[in-house]
Length: 286
Image (cartoon, one colour):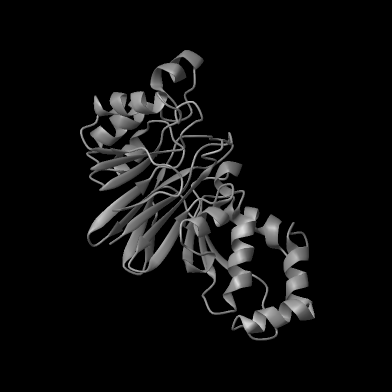
């Protein structure tokens, strides 16, 4: 059965229990990662998965709590693979190619010194061969596709559609993703305020992972409008006729008791589907 792994269910504010955003969708033995926030590589292993299992990485946008672990994830996947897996497919909004280039390019990349040493040193070459690799060792390479809203990415047995997520424009482009396969569908909203484009994307989806920053009344008092709160997430899910709402990108106040219980109660007054308030490393069938 398809399964979702919640690796990061928090925000840029670190707490002992949650920090940043990252999720994995398992589909027929394929593993698609969405965002790669703080410690995503370590959390992936804690969840019982491994970087070499991930074939595709989708970025919703390039705030650090969604992408800061990318060099760690990419280098770990490359270093551990022994040339036995295809290059990583990286999909994201504009800036994704530049982001990768600034990290990995042989001349200016922040981590070029690391992979250059691993490609050329005898001890690293020896480990590479032990892992099933061959010499000369290749540098880490990826296939990158930058996407705009209302585009489609086709994978083996599944497809992904994009929509505009209203969040940090005009400084950052932000995308929401909908993954469809023969028997199901999942929407990853990324960070978004309520907007028609994400609502249209989510229509009739089986599961929607929706950012839910804080208690709605508290957000109104503070004048916070850049992301959904509890009631707004519920209204989006109800209007889109989504079967299951999963609350992610949860702020440090909302994740505490009794705020957590109030959030579920407030949402259930608006939304009549299933509600999941996940802890990090939780997984569930779609």
